[in-house]
Amino acid sequence: MAVAIPAHGGEEHSAAPARREFGRHAAWYVAAGAATTGLQALLFLALRQPLGSHPANLLAIAVTTLANTEFHRRVTFAGAASPTGRRYLQAVLTFAFYAGYGAAVLFTLHAVAPQAGAVAESVAVAAASLAGGVIRFLALRSWVFLRG
Image (cartoon, rainbow, N blue to C red; front, side):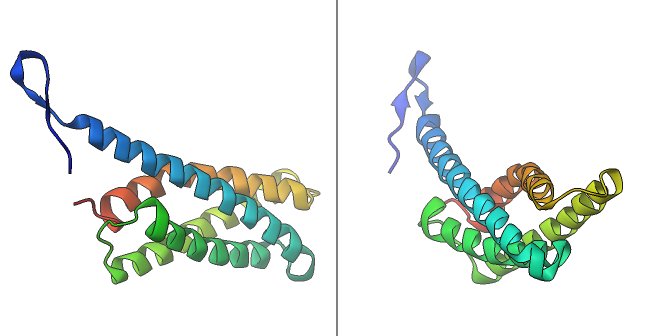
């Protein structure tokens, strides 16, 4: 329960708990994002040779999106209202976004550097996923895991 603290002029100030909550959410989100981006890169590298770049990327995204969403439900936004259907929709939209975005990044990389190897592909996909992370954090915080 937040306690309002009188600010200058007798006004109540209750922004501090919201800032702490935002900071906690952001810290867990970054930690989970770093871990799942690393896992995604490892899966991609392990699967690239037998499956090819694009199938390896899709499978790595599918596994890490599910793991990441569950982590956020249990840890990052623990205790927040989270309708099941909304969580599943968010996971599907996240997968679709990163699958399309990752494919575009790989196609662009191959067009610019046709001889790009597995490490270059993995770095390109991981770097691209960082850009979508900010949007996903805001969507998770404001739409999927509702604050009470």
